[in-house]
Every structure is written in C-alpha cells, then in structure tokens.
Image (cartoon, rainbow, N blue to C red):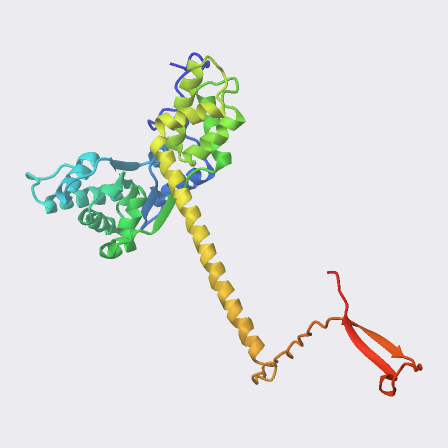
Length: 365
C-alpha cells in the first residue's frame, strides 16, 4: 500500500462516500443548500440529478448531518419492484407499524397518514430521500406524488427528495410522466468540476489524508482533469492508480506520464469513448463548415451574376460585345532594285528607260 510510502494516514482516493473527504465546490454547496431548503420549506418536492460519480451520495450524507432539529428522515436506497414494496420499505424506515397483515396498499397508506399527522402535531419534520431514483417506475413515482399531497393545516406533511442520475430527468420529461413532473417544485443538476476545482479536489483529499509534501506535479493535475473530464469518481480511480504506479517506480512525485499510464489501466474504455466522441464532433463541424462554404459561395456567385445582368434602374443591360480583334497578316519585307538604262549609241529606242525589279529580302528570325 502506498499510504505509508507517501506519509499518509489513510487512503485519500477511496470511491466509498466519506463526509470527511467531501470537497465542497461552489456547485456542491449550492446543491446542499438546495436540499436543505427543500426540507425546511413547505410544499416542496425536490429533485437532485447528476451523472455517475458526481458526488450526489456524498451530498446526501452531508445533508443527513445537517438536518434541522426534530426531523425524522427515511432513506430508500435500493430500488423497489412494486408500489407495494415501496410503501412497505418506507414504513419500515420510519418505524411505522401496519395494522393487520399489510397485504394491501391502502393499509400502508393509512398507517403512513396517521404517522405523518402525529408527527405534524408534535412539531416534527418528516422527510423521505429516495436515492438512485432513476430505477423507480412511473407507478412508484405517481405514488410518491400522492404522498407529497398529504397536508394538514395547509402544510405538506412529507418532504420528498429524489436523487438520481441524468436518466431521471429524461424519465420525468416523457409524455406519460408530465403530471408527475408538475409536482416537482425544485430541481438542481450537478455538473463536472472545472480544471481549477479538479486540482483543488485532489489537493483537498490529499490534505485530509495527511499529506505534508507535494505529491502531484502540475502536469499530473492537468492530465487528471483532461482524462477524468472533471468527474470526481474518475478522478479518485485515476489518482489512486497513478500513486500506486509512482510507488512501484520508487518516486515521490506523480508525473503526467504516470497519470497517462494509470488511465490506460483504469479508464481505457472511457478515454477512448471520449476521444471518439470528440473526433466525431470535430468531423461534424468540419463538414458543416464545408457545406456552409459551398452554399454561401453558390449564393454569392448567383447574386453577382444577377447584378451584372441588371442595371441600377432595374432594366436588363445590353450585353457589350467587344470589337473583333484585327488579325494582322505578316508582310514579307522586300527590296526594290531600280536599274536605269541610259541612252547610248548601241541602244535602241525601245530600250531607253528604266527597269524595276522587286527582290525579296531574307530575314533571319
């Protein structure tokens, strides 16, 4: 184990929910206040969602430690297969006794109603937390909505908090669940950590575990964020493996290379999937940009062609035909040789005069 090697008191990156290691980022603090408000206020049906490993369970445990005084709370963590089982589990968690054999749903509803009225008379708050609520059926969600409508003196008797993955919001947005969605009066969705909070998350957990020296380099922290995408559970798994690799190499500082090696072991499929999605998005953007360029170029070409055919008054222009080019024939230079015949005694009258002979000149190209 690397804990003693790095001088730590305990393992810093366990994926088990532990309040002492909870890093309260701004949005986690908002989520906690959101849940506390849902319990303290009247007529509030609260929803908390987030992807796997976002810290919803840790926020829920923190909530249990900060409940107002005189609050009775029940947590349903395991999915129930039917409405009957759901009501039975709720009664067991609240310690409600059901008259008779309790085979019918109405028996549980009557018992719960009496319990809630008695709690209200005593000035107690009763809250029900359903974890992993994305696994509940529409029938069970409808039953929870019915419980949320139980009132006394215009005050809601049972405060209900649904905690689940992102799929829960998708379920509630279905057409068949529109009536259920209307009962939910408060919603909050947890997002991944940004780069700054991801590094602070790692340093916080190391400090809680007793770290006195620097263990993760700046490059390692950057790689942790890039490979985990800011999801706390992935950060825990990645950092835990990176520290084991650093220990095996007998080093005391986790490097970016160590984090990359750890990612190949514990996050291989996740990293490949994220890269594939990124490449797909990149090609989509490139193709869309190329399509827009071609469409825009065609539109501009058509526009300018129309502008060339219409003058400012809107009348078609007469096409201007350029004058034909004059083709000049090549003329061969010549030399004119004039021979003058002078009058002599031997010359006959017919020979008196001049003779002109045209001799072509030779031109060297």
